[in-house]
Image (cartoon, rainbow, N blue to C red):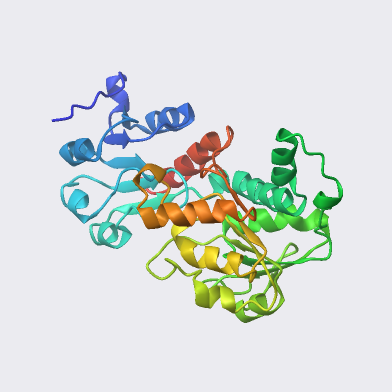
Length: 324
């Protein structure tokens, strides 16, 4: 059995129960929980089995994406009062079953929204200004000026799908570029603001030249971007995904790029991010996307700024303080 080491704390701080922290975190989260009266067990390398063997001892648990807080785990969580997701996506947590057990689920999308918004803008500029392509050519001793004339962003139309924290962050950062920014969110009403006008999905299909995804991964949204979805755009779009890889069927994306139906894509997330476990078909799609010269891929780093852990910690502390 995995034995968890608790931090050495004065006895008078152990009045509200124990919190298991399963991922590397900012020290402010531990300090804040301790100040609230919790005993923190800091185990950033703990396995799924280790969590399962000890979850009955805990009032709270802090997770990222590595630990699955599923029904089986929750059935053993006899004292659990809250699950805190360090980040935004909740797809690894059975929130419905947790709710049925009166366990509160919180996340912290505010914590890395700024970083994600900045990264999405960086990907956009990298593509339209040929930054990745030109850099690679210079590494091959090719100084190609006319071949790398850039496309300006000013005057272009952007469609943002999902207008939560990261969608808003991206829209705000686009404001100096003189672009038309539209946003669609199935679950919000009257959300338009100074950075983006509220739009229907149909209008985004009709007018967008650039599309950026900012929605969670759910049973409804998995592989939302397939051949049918991409065929509905009236213009050749450039697609950005800094949300979740499985929002896109990457074989459909490759097909659309190869057939010149869309301009290209920038992906910070991928359908299967463990490249070592790719099937032959998955490997072929990845190689195909990279071979087009029209795809930029980064390894799920959009929200991984040096600043975001502290912001995530403060966000979680604020929300935990309101439920204990």
